[in-house]
Amino acid sequence: MKISVQSIGLTPHEPLESHIDKKVSKLDTFYDKIQECKVFLKVENNSDKANKTAEIILAVPGDDIVVKKTSASFEESLDLCVDTAKKLLIKKKEMA
Figure 1: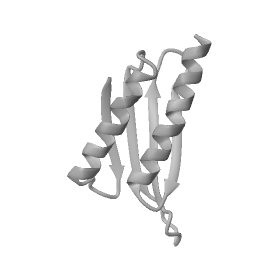
Figure 2: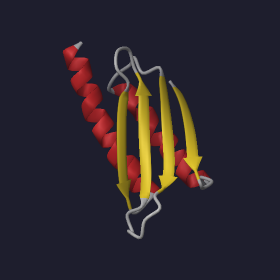
Figure 3: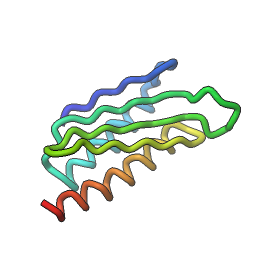
Figure 4: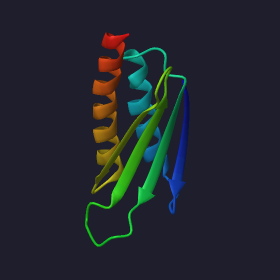
């Protein structure tokens, strides 16, 4: 699976990039037909503490899986995205 990371308005530091790789590559174990994973990181322009948005787009046969979460840190947002994507992939696999 090819993983690409795009960040809007920030530069992801090394620990964040390795966190993304580690978390996202685990999704392969739940559904082996993932062709590509795009991760988008963005700081929302609002006054909330929870303004860091992570979005994961998984290219799979059929409809792509898109998950978007916002929280106080990119790691937390990413973890929430991966958890949700995991559930969606398991559901997709059961339906196949």
